[in-house]
Amino acid sequence: MRFSPRSNFARTLVVLAGLLIASQIFSYLTVLNYALLPSIKQFNKILAHEIEVMLDDDLLLSNGKVYHMDELLRRQLLEKLGVTMHEADEQTMMEEFDNAASVDYLSVDMSEKLGAPTEARISLESKNYVLWLESEAFPGYVMRIPLSELHQDDFQPLFFYSMFIALLVISGGWLFIKVQNRPLATLEKAALEVGHGKFPEPLPERGASDIRAVTKAFNQMSEGIRKLEEDRALLMAGVSHDLRTPLTRIRLATEMMSPKDSYLAESMIKDTEECNEIINQFMDYLRSVQLQDMTEVDLNIVAEDVSVADGATGHELEVSKGELVGKLDANEVAIRRAVTNLVVNAVRYGGGWVKISTGTSADRRHQWIAVEDNGPGIAADQIETVMQPFTRGDTARGSEGTGLGLAIVKRIVEQHDGALKLSQRSQGGLQAQIVLPVIKRQSRKRRQC
Image 1 (cartoon, one colour):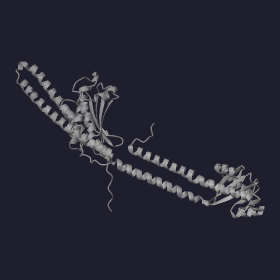
Image 2 (cartoon, one colour):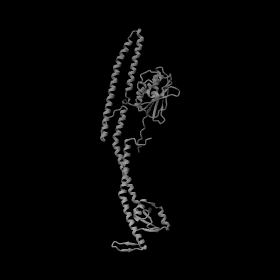
Image 3 (cartoon, helix red, strand yellow):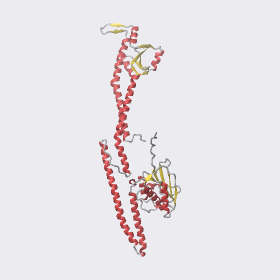
Image 4 (cartoon, one colour):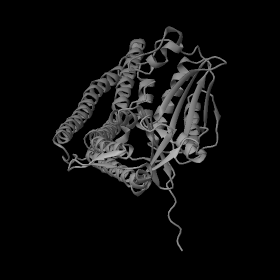
């Protein structure tokens, strides 16, 4: 499973955060190696020199004279410097020494400076740090050195400042990326509208140069698709008109034929009607319902009207009306055409029993209308295939029609942002269900005082 960010916005933000963290780490290492460590070395050198001076009985002055210091004087000088020596039998001090944290770097450096194995430790007392030294240079003693100028609070501002700068940079980067990606969001919305058959106004070309180039290309593509759609509609209208005219003349001629040629006239009339039906189905398939007005549709009324219309032709339909929750906006003519096509298929391929039912999904976000029959059904591996244009299904359901019935239904449903679901009935036969989204409830307005 992949956990990497997928959107360009998230990827850019992750890269920005990664670079910021790397910059912080680099800054820390730079300060550590070029500022902090040299200061520590200088501090260790001075401290080691002071310890050596305090440990020697004789002090060589700059004028070449030797000055002798007894132990009491050395202790007084150490105390003036804030340094105290504690014997190993002082239990309280030794407990503090044992609880202090060992510092390997200081231990190695002080061992080199003093010329004897030395262990350095640091502890925190109140708000000040304390340095502890145990060395063979002064066996039996532990040296306590308060670091009065080094406080715990000195590090907190640095941490807070670093976090503040990091959050400030990330927030600024987030805002910058969001502004940069705003044209892409507008472009995505316009692309979805074009995909649903709508053609928005040309998008303003703004943003970075590459985004402006993409927006310009999209506007050209949208305009090309719009012109293509208009040419297609004009072509189909012309073809329909030009084909229907000779078909009408043929039918008129067949009706004027002599009675002895009636068998031939009936065949020709049937052929012309089939041609008209083919033309109608082509026009239905190519017609875009998104450009037509949407109104509030009641699927129960649609089911009742379709059942009555088919009942007039001699087909008895069973109707089961369910509770419809929410408001459904759709093109009523197109929805009736889709349901009628499903009923025609059920009557044509079923075993004589057809049922129309309606209802609401469990999440109450969709309404549905279904048509069932008790025919041979469709194999599971052919369900997606039969919804493609010019596909008539397998031999079990015959090969009548033009192969556009289900394709027309699917196209109408998809133009309403819905779905067409085909499934086998457990009792045998096929169930075709149209699922349409209801209008989302708008947030309540503020209550007036």
